[in-house]
Structure formats: structure tokens, C-alpha cells
Length: 461
Image (cartoon, rainbow, N blue to C red; front, side):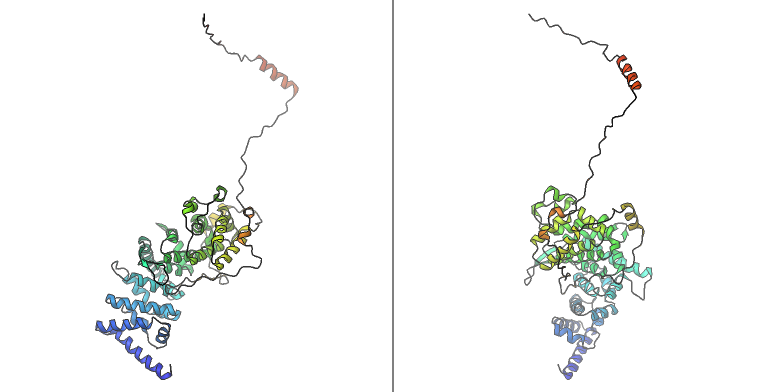
């Protein structure tokens, strides 16, 4: 476009945006419909972003309008926020989060799915996460945080209370479509776990228990959007080593991850040793996780747990190697296979030093507050926004990495069981005079019975 065309287009967009506030519903409906069509293409989004108009603020005012108008306003906002973090920041400034949280209070509101998609996009940036959980830099009062966390917990409860219903198949991808209004809450929870306050929210103990414990079953939901979101949230929790002991000791997320990666292969009795029965209960009927993003995130969770010595010991104790060995044989994604190589490297390495005092470890895990994550460490990766999914890019394996296919089962460290304790008979030496005295006393004892056996005399002629 020439500069003259740019000016003309910008003027047209401003006129179009001005109709969003028109008192006539027909004009508001037509303008939102045109904006949806405009943001359906990359060029349209870029042109709209450079038009110097505050489209987001105008759209946010329409979220509570007539259903058809509100629907198109939400779709336009979703397309814009998925395109640029700058637009997400503008959505925060326009209080899009507050408007959605207020509207979602109405259980009969029919645009819950689009609303959750918008929140999932906005929370891909840190400012959006802080705004959602009430931890903005300019308002960190406990009252503000508690209010937003209360609303977020209500959202999470509705996510857990609803179940996805089949709604056809996507003609382009062939993947099933689900009627699931709160499916993108999973992505929101993954996004908030990028920051410490979000991770604390997932790990905080309430009267109904720790929230993440109730979220783990969603990793086997038939809806892949739910599975992706929750596994990414768990992965972000694993980035903080202070959480590791609680995750594998109290929540046993290792067994949940094993269940995702295990397939229909038959396991010998010794292979099952240390595994939770739920991991192999389906036997040959078990299907391995089909989504590559979920499998990749599950392997990354195990890798992160292996960054501590106690984590590696827990994985060995639960025989994780057997599961990932079989998973490697069936894996078709080369990048995931590379991550499996790294995991095997960590599991088969020799450990030196003494076993820690588990009572002290457990006491420390539940008494000390979580430490601030070091800025030098890798920050949790942001999960994928609903509009555009991108696979995780794992690090390349080392040149001398061991391939899972050539690692022998005998190389895996197993739990050594102690031998049964038996009483050992020790022969005691005594003096000769004492021995003679004991012999005389034994001879004097009358050990015969006072009663004689009755003999039955059978007269047999």
C-alpha cells in the first residue's frame, strides 16, 4: 500500500470502529461482522493493527451486547490477541479480563467458550497473567488478589464439573470437535503457571485439597485441548525444583505421566515392580497417548524431575525406564525420541553418596516457603494459544547420548530388597564342673508319664 492508501484505509477503519458504539443494533452488528472477516487473514490483522485505532476498547464494550454482536466482538478480539503480544497488553488495559469474568458469572451465558479462548490468549503475556490473578504491579493488596483468585477458582470448578461432549469431526484436520465451553480453562491454568503466584495458586492447599491434584485426571480427558493445557501446567510446576518432592511423593505425578506413555505391551512381573497398579491395569487394551504435544510435555516433565538426585531415584524406583523404553520403540516423532535419549542418560547413570534422610526431606518440603526462582534458570515456557498450536522444540541430544534401543534392562538401577532376618544359633562354652552338675540334674528328672496306655485285648477267635 502507498501512504495515500494507508491513510484511506485508516480512515475507513476509524469509521468502521466508530459504528461499534452506534445506538442502532443493526449498524453495530454489521461493523462487528466486517471486523471478523477482516481479522480472518494475516494481512487484515496487520492493517488493522497499524490503523492507529483503539479497536480492543471498543470491542470490549460489546461483550455484553446482543448475542450475535457479542459473538462477533469476541471472535475479532480473539483473532487480534492471537496475533501480537502488544494487542494482548491493550486488551488488559481495556479491562477485557474484568468484563469477561463478570459476564461468565451468568451460568446461562452462551459465549463461555469464546470468552475462555480470549482469556487464554491474553494470559500468554505476564501482564495478562498478573491481571487475571490480581497480582498487578500497581495493586498487590491481599484483598485484590483474593478476589481475583476466588473468581479464578470458580472458573476452575466449572472446568472440572463439565465434561466434553462429541460434536463432529474437523474436516481439515480430522480431529474430533468437542462441545466443551470451559475447555480453554486448561490453557489459562497453564499460562498462569508461568509466574510464581500462578504456581502457588495451583499448589495451595484449600479445604477440598490441592488444586493440581484435582487437575491431574484431565491429562487423560478425551478432549486434547484439556490434555495439552494441564500437562503444560504440570510441566511448568516441574521447573521449580522446590516443588519436586511434593509432586512425586505426595501427588505421584510420575505414575500419571507413565500412564500417558505406556502402551499395549505386555509387562513381565519384574517390569511391574515399583509401578502403581493403575499404570498397567488396562494391559493390552491400553492405547498410548496419540497427541505428540502431550507426549513431548510428559517426557519433559520426567526430564525436569531428573534434575534432582532424589527425583531420579523416585523414577528408578517406579521403573520409569521400562515405560519409556517401550515408548521409544513406538515413537515416530524424532524430536521426542531425542528427549527420550536424554532421559535414559539420566536414569542409567551411577549415583554416588549416601541416601538422604527422608524424614528431614519431607519436613523441609512442607515447612519452608517456596524460594524465588533464580533469574538465571530457564523460565517456564508459555503454552500455546488456542488459535495457533506450535509443537515444543526440545534441545538437541548430546553426541554421546545413549540410545534407548541399546540400553539393557540390567543397566537400570533397581531397588535392592534386604534379605530376611534370621536368628543365628551360637554355641556357648561352659565349664566342665557345671556341665557335670547339669547332667546329674537332667538324669534325676522323671520324664515318664504317670498314666500307662490302655491296651485293648481283642479276642479274635
